[in-house]
Image 1: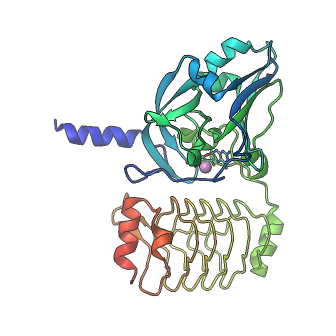
Image 2 (image 1 turned 135 degrees about the vertical axis):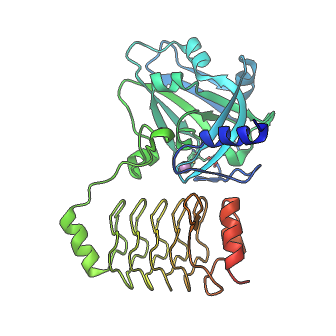
Image 3 (image 1 turned 90 degrees about the vertical axis):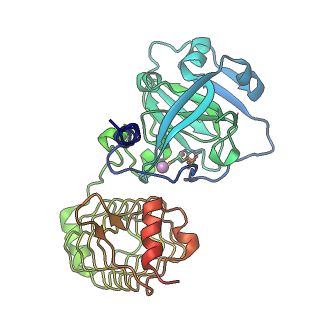
Length: 348
Ligand SMILES: Nc1nc2c(c(=O)[nH]1)N[C@H]1C(S)=C(S)[C@@H](COP(=O)(O)O)O[C@H]1N2
Ligand SMILES: [Mo]
C-alpha cells in the first residue's frame, strides 16, 4: 500500500460533513475582532455553584500545571483546520481547585468584549471534551486576534463553543444560553459530526407563502426559509436574515441581497444573473451550479463559500465570467480549490 494515499484518506475521515479545509497555515478570524478594556490586566475568575470562588492573574494561570492539546477546529461557517496545538490549563484542573457543588450542571464561558460574548455547555460535556483554558498556540502566547491571552478551547464541538478573551467561568444549576445560541439560533449542542449547526426557527407556512408572493423580504428575520424552485425574480431582500435558507434552483434574476445575512444559504443551480450581494455575509453559502453572470459580490464576506462541487461526477460548477464582480480582496479567504476555480473563470 502507498503511504501518502493512506494519509490522505485518513485526513478526509477527520473532516465532518459539509466542512472543507482552509489552506495550510490559514486561520480566519470570525466574529468579534478585539476584546474590551485593553488597558486592564488580564484575569480569569470562576464563580457560581462552587465551594470557593477564585480569580487568577495571567501569571498565576501560567504557574498552574500546563497541558498540551492538539485538536481539529471546525467552524460552523464550514471551514476546518486540522491539528491546531494549544496549551494551557485544563478546565478539570481548575475545577479541582474551586470544587463545584453537586448542583453545578452547566458551565458558562464569558468574554471580556464589547457585548460580553458568551457560550455555555453542560458541565459533563465540557469535561468529557477535555476543555482547555488555552494560553499558548503552537508554542507561543495566543495572539489577541484569536482570543489571546486567555481563551477556552472545546475539542469536538463547533468553534463557537470556544470563547475568545475569556474572563469569567460560571458554574450554573440551569443553562444560560450563549450569545449566538440565544440570538442567532446556533445549536446548543454544536456537534460537527451530527451537523448541529442551527436550530430552525418556525416560520409560519402561510406567512412564508405570502412573503414569497410579494417578493419583498427586506429587513425581516427569515432564517431557514425554504424557497427551493421558487420564482423570485427581482426579489428585494435588503438586510434580511436568511441564514441557512434554501434557494436551490430558484429564479433570482436581479435579486437584491445587499447587506443580507446569507451564511450557509443554499443557492445550488439558482439563476442569480445580475443579483447583488454587496456587503452581504455569504459565509459558508453554496453557489455550486448557480448562474452568477452579472452578479455583484463587492465587499461581501465569502469565508467558507463554495462555487464548485467536485465531489460529484461531473462536477457541479457555477457559471462565472468577466461580468461577475468578485474582487481579489473578497475572494482571498476562499478555500484553495474554490479560489482556483473562481480565478480561472472570472475576468480580471
Ligand atoms: N468573544 C468572542 N468569542 C468568540 C466569538 C466572538 O464573536 N466573540 N465568535 C465565535 C465563533 S462563531 C467562532 S467560529 C470562533 C472563531 O475564532 P477565531 O476568530 O479565532 O477563528 O470564535 C468564537 N468565539
Ligand atoms: Mo463560527
